[in-house]
Length: 344
Picture 1: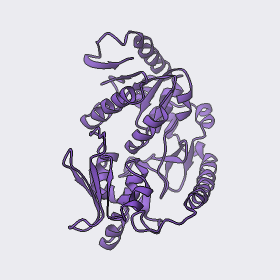
Picture 2: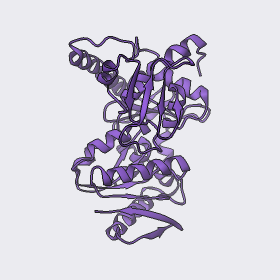
Picture 3: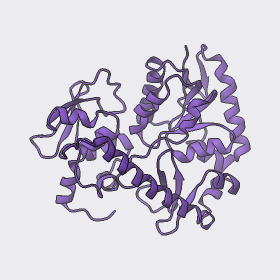
Picture 4: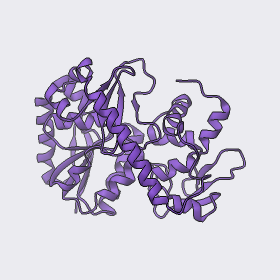
């Protein structure tokens, strides 16, 4: 990780407001109405189903940088700790690196900038510049896709990666996977401390959200590469790419004809997140959803399954789960572990 001095760290800590806005916990207007000092927000903890909102952004926190304090679950986060919780980055150095990726190139935080009268026009102008820059980077990286065998070793075919627009950053040695609005850059070298990166100053959106308009089963996974593995095997998948996109998925899922299979990694944090997401999709949006504790047993996820077994075996496994879903009203076991089902 690049060296970042204490002054820069303190300055980046001011971007907590931006992070809360981009996570869907509040809006820029919410900060303006409360003079940027204190405003009510949804609890940003993915493990806490916060409805109605019970957390507060405190811009004049007595110990320094602003924090968000949830009066329901009792947690207090500054920007770095919140990034660690929401993006599963336990090391402080990783949290600082991620904050630098997001906000190192920004001028001022949402909590300290004046909102112009033509706010919408400014937002659209910035968004257009970002889209052009990102699209050009993706196009450039696509020219180098054959300069790495990272994808081939994991079971992907050349035709598939080209059809999906994957690229390769030769200088940074990262596989570039386009998302709905930007891209995810995956480290191809095992010595990288941060496996997944996104464009500076840009919140990476979902991957595969167009599936929300289609009928049939769609798998919800955390990572873009896992979503691609499912699609390589003939399935349909949506990747969150960041836990901060949970709220976005819930909002987009309304009236979707899809049947959702929540299949996160089998660790405590992601299982709580998956259970909370499945409940909200059903209770709030009334969409059919099934939550699997251990969908990809005996492997960690669909990418590992694809690399070890091939797309034929993964396709059979996916088809089996789709067929079993017709009995959602009957509690049953999968790979020795209970699987929760939620139905209409």
